[in-house]
Amino acid sequence: MRHVRKPPEPVSLTVFRAAQPHATWEQMRDDAHHGGQQAYADIKSDLVQAQRGLCAYCESYISSGLTDDEVVGARSRQRVEHFHPKSDTTGIVNWALHWPILWAVCLGGSQKPPEGEPFDPAE
Image 1: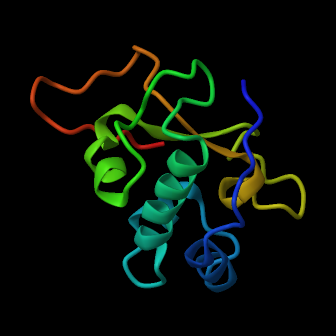
Image 2: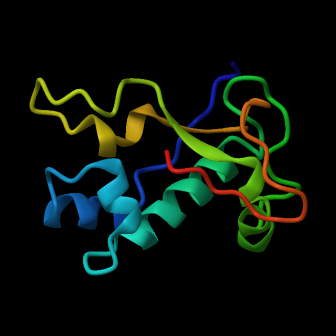
C-alpha cells in the first residue's frame, strides 16, 4: 500500500458523530435526519480523491477520475473498508465512524454488480 496523506475528516462525519455518537456504520449510511447519508457520500468521495482513485489494497482504479461526478459515477467499483473491526464496541472509540481507519477499496472480485446495474454493497 502506498502512503496516503488523508485530508481532515469530512465535516459532515464530524457533525453526524456529534449528533449520533453511538451510531453504527449502517445507521449512519441510512440516516436521513442527521446528515448520515451526506456523511457517507462525503467519506467515499474524500477517500477516493485522497487515494487518487486507487484501491487501498491492490491499487486498481476504483474511479476513472477525481471530480465528484467521476467518483460518484464509479460507485459500482468501490466501497469503504474499516481497517479495525467496525463492530468493536469495547472501548471509548466508535470504530464504525472513526476516520483514520477508513479506506476506499475495490470489490476484490468477490462482489460484482449485475450487468448494467450500479452496485453499492452494504458495508
